Image (cartoon, one colour):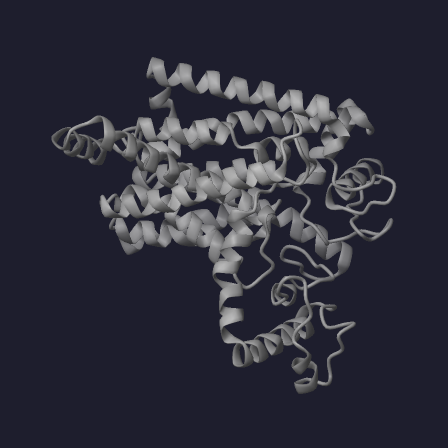
Length: 437
C-alpha cells in the first residue's frame, strides 16, 4: 500500500515536498484570482458554479435542495457538492468566506491527490515512472483551475483515484474491508457524478484474471452492492418523499443522448427534416426521457445511412478529441493562455498513448489492468452522450501515468546499454506492485 512506499525516506520526502508545493500554488491561485475563476454571474445564475453557490445557500437556510427550480425542490443534480459547500458556508459565512474556504479545501484535495497518483503509477510501472507522472500532474494547469472553481470535478477526481487504489488493494488482499471501501467510494462518487456507479463492474475482469472462485465473486459482489445501496438510500428516500416517485439519480429536463447526436453545435442536415417531418429545427434538441431518445435514434439512423463516415468519426475520434485533447481550462491563470495549455495537454495525451503501446509491448498486462480498464470504462460510458473536456478531465492523470512510463523508457534507452535495459525490465516486472501487502 502507499504506507509501504512512504516508509522509503526518499519517496516520502519527494511526495511531501511535491504535495506541499502544489497546495501552496493552488492556495495562492485561489486567493489571488478569487471570483475571477467563476464561469457565471452570481446575479444571473447563468452557469453551474454560481448555481451551486446559490443551491448551497438555499440548502443551508431553507433545508431544500434546489437547482433551476426557483424555491421548489429539485432532483436536477446530485447533492454532493452543495452539501459540502453549505457546510463551509455554515462555518465561514455565506458570502466570500464560505466559498474561499471551499476552494482552499479543494486545493488541499488537489495536493493530497499526489499520493494516490504516485501509488497508481508505481503499482503499474516503477518508482521513476511514478515520479515523472507525479511531476506532470503537478504542472498541469487545469488542476489549479479546477481547485479554484466551484464545480464537482476536483472532489470527484480524488474519489476516483482512491477508488482505483482501493480496487487494486482489494483484488490482492481478498479482504472484506477493502471491498466495503470500494462500495463506499463508488457511492461517494455517485453523489457527484452518477456515471461512476457501474465502474465496479470491471471488478469481474480482475476476479477472472486473478482466478477468484465463483463463491468469492458472489461474496464480494454482494459486499460492494450492500455498501453502495446503504449510502444511496438517504437520497432515494428524500426523492420519494419529495416527489412521490423513485428517482435513482437525477431527473433533468435535457437528454444527454439526444444532445450527443449534435455535431459541432449544428442542426441535423436539411434532408433529415424532410425524412422526419414530425420534427422541427426549433425544437429538435428539446425534450427528455423516451421522446428525446426516440429523436436521437432517428438522427443517428438518418446520419449513419446518409453520411456514415461523419457520424462514425463523431462517435469515435471526435469523442476522444472532445474528452481528452481539449483541456478543462476555462479561465486563464497567471495570464497563461489556453493554446499553451492545449499544447501541453496534447503532448501528454500523445505521449500517454505511446507509453500505453510500449507497456503492452513489454507485456505488463496485470499491472496495467486497473488504469486501462478505468480509461476504457470512462471513455465508453461517454460515447453515446455529450462529450466535453469537463468529463474527460478526471482521466487525464492516467494518460500522465503512461506518459511518465514513455519518458522513463526513452531515458532508459539513451542512458543504458541493452543488457542493463533488459535487467531493468526484469526488475520492473518483478517489483511492479511491491507496495501491496
